[in-house]
Amino acid sequence: MPLSPEQAKDIEEQRAQTAPTRRVVSPGMEQHLYTAIPVLDHGFIRVIDYMGDDAAITQAARVSYGKGTKSVQNDEGLIRYLMRHWHSTPFEMCEVKLHVKLPVFVARQWIRHRTANVNEYSARYSILDREFYIPAPEHLNAQSVVNNQGRGDVLEGEEAARVLDILKADSTRAYDHYEEMISDDGQAGLARELARMNLPANIYTQWYWKVDLHNLFHFLRLRADAHAQYEIRVYAEAMCQVVGIGFRSPIRRLRIIALVRFR
Image 1: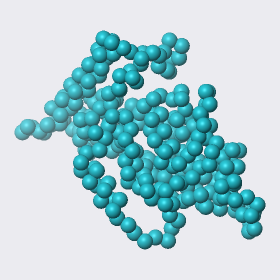
Image 2: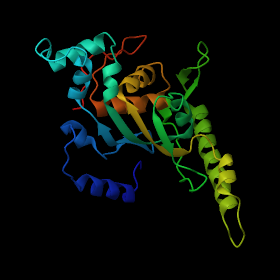
Image 3: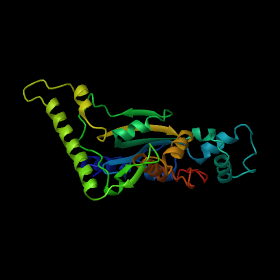
Image 4: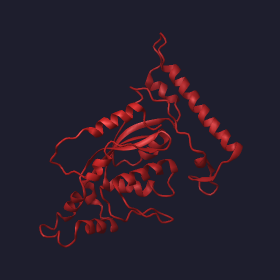
């Protein structure tokens, strides 16, 4: 399960808390706060905090025009105009902070987007959980013969079973050795910062990821695209749900063209 009973209880307690505030509040994002959206077999995303709403975007867009311009275009129309023409700077006025649980190999793809603030779970100080990403059979593909970066046909039958057995056995064996190396059993045990190097790239890690909407759009245009790797694309699609982004996906490239709203 993506969430342990302890995590689910913690989320329930967080969602039960309320506090008075003078800052802008978005009712839609308030509904999302702390709620975990499952992704893959053990992963999730959840909103930890946010800043701004539609008004913050339109306020930034109108700042150079002075008073009286709101009657020229309503907020919804202005946001649509900004998105349609990719005038994305005003969207930097809004931010979202997410708690993400994801496989290490997905995290290494994700971190290439260097326009966010990230703080990751440290395996130097803590022991990683025995949780690994094992693809569902329908996502177990052969290497594409026409695209060095892509997948080909889905593996079937004995070949699929063989690959799944290898993935599961290697993950289990590596974690067993990890536990053995850090176990004291009357001895010091290997340092955690060294023992972690034997773990496979499909083990799960966690981080906080804070990003403004301008850079989130860039992330989604690349990672929610049909050509993106499935394992990172499902995280991007979950984020699309959270921030309420309407989008269309042409054959060759995803284009976010509809109203962007925290709803």
